Image (cartoon, rainbow, N blue to C red; front, side, top):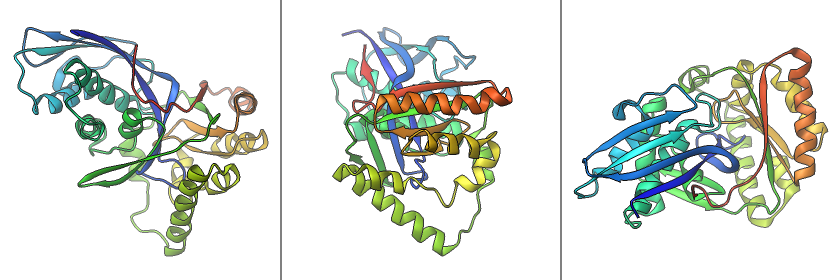
Amino acid sequence: MDEIKIFAPATIANISCGFDVLGCCLDTLGDEMIVRKSSVKGVRITKIIGEDLPLDTEKNVAGVAALALLKNIKEEYGFEIEIYKNIKPGSGVGSSAASAAGVVFAINELLNKPFTKLELVEFAREGERLACGSPIADNVAPAIFGGFTLVKSTNPLQIVELPSFKGLYATIIHPQIEIKTEDSRSILPRKIDLSLAVKQSANLGSLIHALHTNDYFLFSESLTDYIVEPHRSKLIPDFDKVKSNALKAGALGCGISGSGPSIFTFSKNIQTAYNVQGAINKVYEKNGIAHHTYVTKINIEGVKVL
């Protein structure tokens, strides 16, 4: 195989109580990429459609991730990359992670899969280092593994795959503003109250147990962020109203996706997810805030070959 076309999924990271460690993969929202072998060594980005992003390999997250992988192989050829962006950068649903995860998955397929999924995450997070200054893995891990994932450690890198509920859907609302990851990190406190840390860790443990035991009630109870959301929510217009409407419409929980401004909700089934979509749309429609909403099931496969 000399060429491959893939779907690189959007992701939700920082899921409520799981700041920097817990993420999940989405199914219908994502980018498409074409990667092909080239007689010219190295990596070239030949086309980007949908967003104004650099074609320079070393200034593009996909290029940097691909170069990280290529350092570990000895081949007489290189790779050309086409990127069709459907995820807006700075939206909070893993735009940079989709590009980084997608390209390393595609190259690995073209090489007959010499690398494990964990190694692909290691390469992909070098793209994240370019995007936000730190080689975070909570978006690229679910993009590659699929479903829910927990980043147990970054040095050494350890990823824990978690089960997902059958029929679980996410509704995402994205106000058309951009929040840079470095800006949203800068407003976070450097010290936190011990009692808040205890409640947060209890919620994280409970949420993981809920996924393993298929306990929707416990899952819903655990989707509370005592540490990050109170600060970051101030950057998102009408966050509290969106959250209130979502819960009233039947959402299991609601929180900030990644570093924002997108807001995620989880629902037990597709009908509730659409009910939630209508309820949260009303908030921004009333206030005249431009926005997009998406309803998608949880993607348990990760990056897919098209």
